[in-house]
Length: 232
Image (cartoon, rainbow, N blue to C red; front, side, top):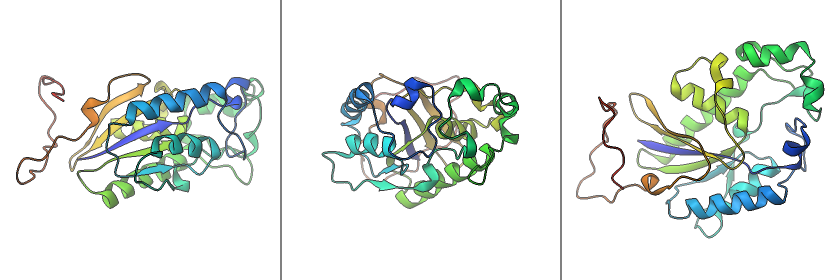
């Protein structure tokens, strides 16, 4: 069972200014965002991470660097975890974008949404590359690993939708706030979505239990009735 912690970057001036940042370079965390990432780094400090992997964009690298600080881990980046490529929408105010015909497609039928311009991609492409990245890192790090992927709101929502077995057209029902964590445990049979949009919960349950003797593969069966929860 490989566990990935999906961490959204902290707040930026683009977030508060209502601008679609996309792949615009040089957008970093604002003062509140810096405080958010220090807080989430402190929360996650007890969790032994096998890797910290980030979108290459500055706001995510800043966030992931705070989590990696003090650990014997080199921060790694993966472009597939980068923001959706919004094409000609990049850098534009949201109050303008809501008037575009494509806005309704993004809201109601996102699997069909393809952003305009030479650099634009479809949200289905965003989901496909991000899910592929997560699964590739899972395979690389192994079944006992807990690792962190620092990425963006729409990317996290798309990965969660895949794990929940939801059509991409339902991904707008999911929320991923700045500096929130969402957690997915991947098994041979299915993923289990353990947390979504967690901005302050205890993380003890994310610490792998100590091994006692030979490791037994964790069951990928769902607990009928819901179970007793974590005993950590």
